[in-house]
Amino acid sequence: QVQLMESGGGLVQPGGSLTLSCAAVGGSVNVLEMNWYRQAPGKQRELVATLSRANIYYADSVKGRFTISKVAIENTVYLQMTNLMLDDTARYYCNGRLGTDYNFWGPGTQVTVSS
Image (cartoon, rainbow, N blue to C red; front, top):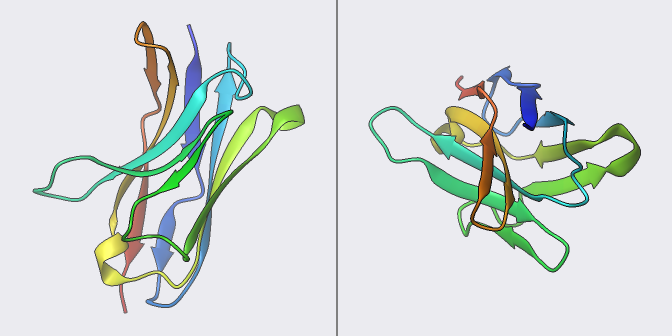
């Protein structure tokens, strides 16, 4: 069983920056496809960014502002978020996936962008 734990959320003003972390225990971020999702109140959970062996993906709404990366020795995935906007307010979830059989989620971390 893989456990994922997010951290780094908080309150930030528009235009500000935050870096979210996702620490993995029981599985390697080098093996798993790692994803960041977010869910705002009243909205569906949406994929924000993906990091896998073959692919890096960003949602159009965050391209050029967010960067997904990993530090293998820490077994941690990061989401650097810059130029944050009001619409970025959401709970951010780390997800690790391996094929169709394994799908793991963290509890999430809240990001609030407000002036």
